[in-house]
Image (cartoon, rainbow, N blue to C red; front, side):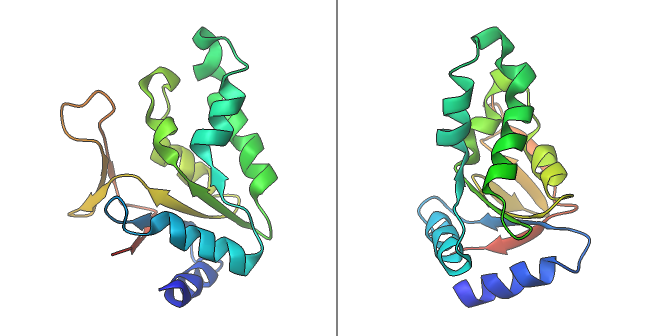
Length: 152
């Protein structure tokens, strides 16, 4: 599977959509696949939950939503190498208090570089979702501008 992923990542360099989402059930191997890709490319995976969480702790709670996107941009610039950024543990981006649109944020990052991220939700009928309908963090998006890569 890592070989197929590497081919798709290489192909991203010449297509309009430079955002590839690894999609699979919990414990399907998305994080492991990202680590394998990182090892082969001599990169580090940006763990959003840990890295962004650490940065946000230094900011007073009422101001976090104002700085979260900028903090993430700084982290993305730091972790990006050779036009490629690998991201995992995105759940923090869905925190209601941060007032972010996670997929739109990933799309913006993919305008500057290829982005490969482990999507913490599902893909059904060309719709990406996070959480379930009625859950406070529920999000639903069109799959436009995204290259889905299923991990089983």
